[in-house]
Amino acid sequence: MERPRILIVGGGFAGLECARRLERKLAPSEAEISLVTPFSYQLYLPLLPHVAAGVLTPQSVAVSLRRSLRRTHIIPGGAIGVDPQSKVCVVRKITDEVIAQRYDVLVLAPGSVTRTFDIPGLTDYARGMKTLAEATYVRDHVIAQLDLASATLDQKERESRLQFVVVGGGYAGTETAACLQRLTTAATHRYPRLDARQIKWHLIDIAPKLMPELGDALGTAALEVLRERGIEVSLGVSVAEVGAETVKFTDGRVLPCRTLIWTAGVAASPLIGTLDAETVRGRLAVTAEMRVPQFEGVFALGDAAAVPDLAKGDGAVCPPTAQHSARQGRAVANNVIASLRNQPLEPYYHKDLGLVVDLGGKDAVSKPMGVELRGVPAQVVARGYHLMAMRTNAAKFRVGANWLLNATAGDDFVRTGFLARQPARLRDFEYTDAYLTSDQVRSHAQSLLAKG
Image (tube, rainbow, N blue to C red):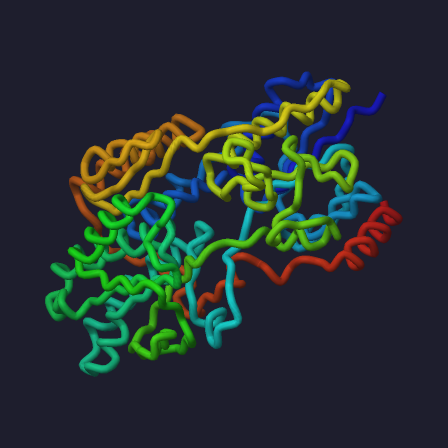
């Protein structure tokens, strides 16, 4: 008898945890497990600002899938469409070959992409912070601005190169601004021709508060830390237009600036749009058991699914956080196993354990189990949480060693030359134009199945 085929789309927190539990709880004879992912690592996304700031190396936050998974078949590529009627997932491999991957049970955990708006120049001139490549590129770009500002005698060019704007007052934007501001401040002693007072960082957000999930006290504490460092924080403000050398805000200000880092939220993977399924604010509508009710054998979780938050009730859905995604991955694995064994499925329930925000150095704010912390105690909690959340001991060691090395030896402010000549746009890293329409999916699926 042929084994059921379980196909997992996405190798992030949700996908990896699902595959790990399926391996542990299913005998090899019970199912064949495959995982579609363009990279053979799980990206530990919360520490990307540390990569951009050079505190951590890129490899330290790329947790190897092959260290964690023993018998899961890893398909190097990205899912670009799903045909639930034919039970086929259309996959574009990293060689650009398009294949049809059959499944009996599909677990959709494709994650999210950077959310953008129809702002002139945004997609051409903004830099993202959603992928490992983007974080590496942002570091190169920021150091390049210091190099070029130091070399020029043109005061207007120098001013535009030394102004940096981060859009988004959530965790990602706040940590990015805080960590990169520390990078440029520390770098000034290596650039005798630059005056630290000329380097200006701006953090803007359309919301009236910074990280409102933290509460007023901790949000205010984080705001004070940023302003004490000289970061200009503007709330209730967004971007009106982005140019190669200027940024215009909605309050009318025009800044000479060649660096805009966009962290203003995420949207579910465009893969979700290929299913013709019900959505909630762009995320797949699923039951509390994380089943997609319209389709047999399809589960969805993580950033791409609107999973009911039973701990909060009142129709709330789980926020797109690593904490929920990892736990949903394990819960979906249990439900997949239950479905294969004709057992009842269990609803997902998890009460958020708290929040941590690392502002670099000794600065942090944290709220573990509702307890508000700031400064060194908050930093200990934040970094301890990140180390515990890393999946492998090798990853824990690399991150801990990198933190120690950076704290004692500092940074050499070296550029790798990554995309040195070609300016990188948001879509260059996240491939948002690679997905098929629902009609194209059906056509591709039938054609590929006919061939083989």
